[in-house]
Length: 450
Image 1 (tube, helix red, strand yellow):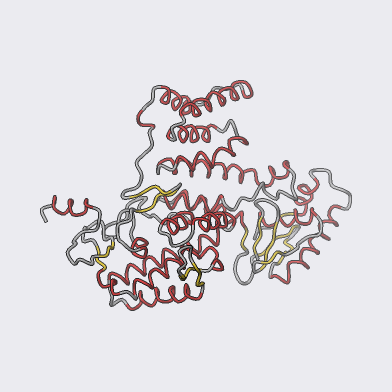
Image 2 (cartoon, rainbow, N blue to C red):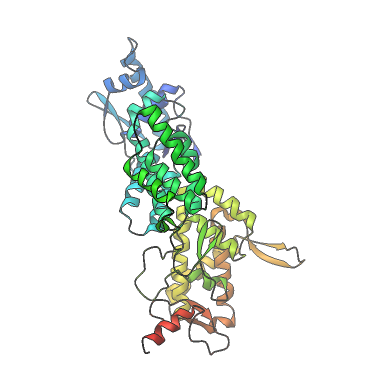
């Protein structure tokens, strides 16, 4: 069973909406129990929350009636509401824990905070923040009750947004920071850490005047409404902008990367989409460097597939929108893409690796089942992944490309760059190339006297 509390209350079983609680207070009561899943909430506490210190005389009997109705509605779906002493608790199901978006959100934020790779950290924050569809229990709780129930959740969300923005700035993704923070600053105009991140993003986007204006408006709000000056960090940032401190400029992008829209992608060097899919910022030859993972999030995968003409631009836009609505499904597809990339690299670098070939073959066969034969604008027919593949469309597209390469005699001209920190794959039909298209690889080896 899946429960959504971040926004309007919703319950789903095997992907289908389940109507739980005919009354707003019934759904609110269930929401409270789910926020404390596995732990008892006393009847007195439930009464206090549902009626805000003004309970009717029959409040205790009403709570008992609500619980009875919820039990009847949830029992067929494996959800048990148990009586514990003088209270109630939602127990975990026999098939494992129920999916509750609040628990998933806090877990993802914790993983992101502990993650050393900035690209992966952003992906985790994106996944966590994508669970928010609105205020906690938006359709069954008022603002006062929300504050009593989950005031810390709202703070955790803002903190996650701030940390994500700071990581994005470190990776040169200032345009995305501007887009993400603009609506939030309208809601929280005196949140100084948000203001600082937005000022930095605007400054690096060449909008120094807007950055300075944001500081002035924030200063006015803080002094007139709260009677305080901006904190020292924000004042220092403002002073650095006034003197055009060069350290505020945009940080360099990842190694061997190209900017496509709002995403960083690896350089194109190999001569075939299936090989480009295998190549990474820092290569395969040495220890992975922080930020070297180019498959940071689903948006990157979709943009890459469009950039390599494996799918159409309009499909890229649609897939990105769908991924924002279905972050869990998008994360599953991203993991599938990473596994396919690892298996494909192993298959191409070691033709004797039967396990890797079988794994890639299974992906190719699956992509073939999800393909359609269409007529292009040039009048020629071609196989393309079917829109029915949904979020798996880019994976199916690259799997088809991999299948075509493995069935092509050019497969025997695939070479791996011997540079210790590279290992990028490329086609060498001439039989004379030694290095990939990154001239620095050969230069490094020559400089080492090898």
